Length: 304
Ligand code: KMH
Ligand code: ZN
Image 1: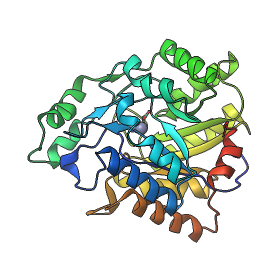
Image 2: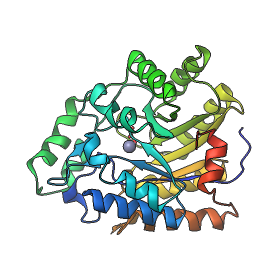
Image 3: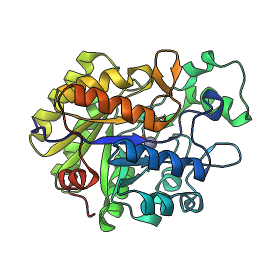
């Protein structure tokens, strides 16, 4: 098991899963994304995992011009590690999804470690109406959606990213994804200390049960030994419980409105910073210290 030093908090500010009708607090415009990221960093997030949205209707976009409207402000106002999505939305092509990481060459980018069914349609039951037509289709069409991340996709993207000095948040939605990562390491496509982001509770991936978390951790320990940093994210109402469990097991944590709209049962999170503050309280309650961005850079071997 990797030795626990300090805990890295990642904040995933807006993502591409939730839609504007689900919460009035979901950041949509470049200004809202910048302000939410700055507040999250001030609350203790060392890493900001970033997607962009069309300012007119909140639809996920990978247009670098939209990222350009919030990245300079985030870089000027915080020391946080910028982590750009290459997942984009499961509805986009891999080429589209890679555009921001190729354009901005960030320290860190997400990399999804296998193809999965990505079932968003259960959320349809929770909402009577939507402000924008794309929102219903986004959920409905997920019944027949494969989030495509083939071996060729991953290998190409990681090789291109590595040429820019970008390292990866390796998103593992199931146990097989850990084996995919091990294979990339064995073939020399990924080197150094790997950053595993285990994702729990997406329909199509591993569930959110405590035994699922233990199984993921044990398998990662067996496959990677001391050569990895482990972080977790729990989707929806699983977020804080899974963060607490993993932190107690030596892991890092990811929160943010990309992963959950909630602060407590029935209570929407009014900001990303409120989730960062809550997880920080949980971590400090466990006598764990929070990593600064530079400490996180050191642990993850980032270019800085
Ligand atoms: N929305 C998360 C479950 C990515 O951006 O590459 C996964 C994610 C994907 O963060
Ligand atoms: Zn994401």
